[in-house]
Image 1 (tube, rainbow, N blue to C red):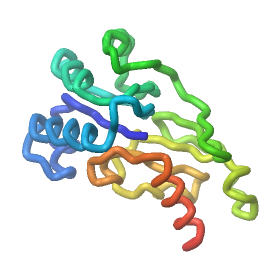
Image 2 (cartoon, rainbow, N blue to C red):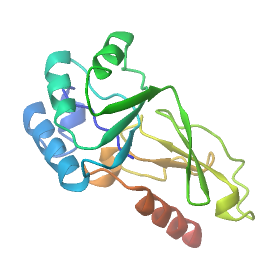
Image 3 (cartoon, rainbow, N blue to C red):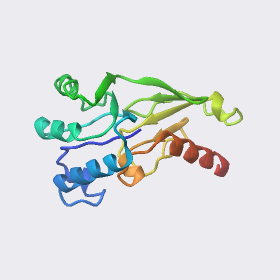
Length: 178
């Protein structure tokens, strides 16, 4: 799971992540992605792949390893969606998606979604967990008081992709502490 925005030449995106410009930001994000993701990996991108210069953004997307499933974000216009479809590494594009890993249930979307009534007395495997990426928050649990929502933004994960095993470990540890 990951959210990356390339070609988003706004300082409120790249400066809080520790970069002086968008080109250094994008170069490091691509490097981080490709250090973690293998060519055969299935990757679910939670929207807003690129903003600004679409040609530049598309060149960045094409450099990413893995089989990428895109969950549409609010900046993923119809024009950008057709560009994504031109990439050999893009497998599918959806508006939101149910995802099951082992016996755990997830709803993948760009925006935080309330998909669970946060009944903490039920086992984790019987609950639905919302995975999202819209908010650019550094706090992966910032919406847990609203429902079972986990943020996959780069901002919350030191500019690296987050894998499903780590997400489960984070959630299990969060549940023990709260």
